[in-house]
Amino acid sequence: MKSLWKEFRKYAVPSVIGMMVSALYIVVDGIFVGRGVGASALGSINVALPVTTLMMAISMMITMGGAAIMSIKFGENKHEEGNNIFLESLFLIVVISAVLSIVSVVFPEQIARMLGASDELVKGTAEYLRYYMMFGIGFSGSLALSAFVRNDGNPNLAMISLILGAITNIALDYTFIFIFKLGIAGAAIASGLGQLASVLLLLTHFARKKGKLKLYMPKLNKADLIRILKTGTPEFMVQVSPAISVFAFNQVIIRRIGEIGIAGFSIIGYISTVLLALFIGISQGIQPLLSYNYGKKDYDKVNKVFKMGLKTNFVASTLIYLMLLVFGEQIISIFNNDKTLIKLTYDAMIIYGFSFVIASINIVNVTYYQSTEKSKIANIISTSRGMVFTIVFLIVLPLIIGDIGIWVSIILGEVATLILIMYLVYGKKVNIKFDKKEIKLCNNKDIKA
Picture 1 (cartoon, rainbow, N blue to C red):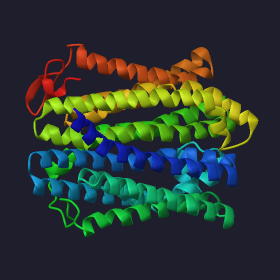
Picture 2 (cartoon, rainbow, N blue to C red; picture 1 turned 180 degrees about the horizontal axis):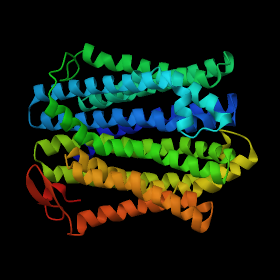
Picture 3 (tube, rainbow, N blue to C red; picture 1 turned 45 degrees about the vertical axis):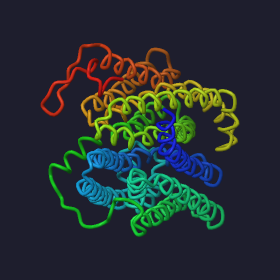
């Protein structure tokens, strides 16, 4: 058991550090924008979030789908097939990121209005989208390469690359916003250049031949591409659900509370980014161990790693929520010193923030089923969590209990998801077919939670 904890720490700790640092520089972005440009700029970035998150979600879908299959192939001792899966994943990411980037750069104002930006926020949202998405392939490439390099036995380089990207971004944020006065465009450019720095460092893994993976033209196979997308779909739902939620929340908040509500929700979004990065970092850290041991058919070790992830996420999320209760107002004041905005944001955050205790458990469950190619179960959980429960509660609760219902809706959405997971695993009601054979969820050792 000690050696398994050592393996768990080898992958989980660098993954968490890398994800947290990556999230923190997004937060620093928000601090620089809030202090150097203003609250309306924070609102513009928040309105643009669904587009930037969509690109990240697609990248992570392909990355985590490819990384899971690659690790399974390595566990089966099929290294050449695993390498080709890696290359096919990169091909998909480059093509899709390029298309999204071109559309966003050419039509930023139209997209801003589609996202519901008010007349005051349209210009800032469009400007941020145009310059941010110019570096779309850099953002996607950094996410993808860090995951594959980590799974190729070099988690420390993956972590260092994200730290380098963060430091570069922070330094350029200060330079572009406070010295050159480039405003919201400066923040977007700084983020893009930070990601390019990360990509360049990650490429040294292949130049120095540190692992099994090699770069060459892939042999594109339709079945492989479909398998990558199918396996990664649950990760897409995990990543895109915040964008869908932000879009829905923005529409409700701007009607019921106004632009100060959007600014407050933007600050909550920055803080939430750090929390989600921790939980997703732990989940992504255990993914190589889950997939590799699943490929080896060592199901006992798979289940032990899964439980480690659950315990770690739950303890961490509980401690962090307690810290938000105690130091929440001080944290919010870093972004803006408007007392009215601070109070509104804190009152919302202490309700909204509790949802992450439950979300931390749900995210590990999605990773578990995705990593072992039980995509149907993972998709049921992810879709219900991101597309159904929270949105339904968001529509209904404010009509019943007023504005507080906006913030309670996310908690009930996560609770409903957890109940669904318990039902699927222990309810003895659902039989789902995988690979042309029927598996009963509550009885099969290799998927038992």
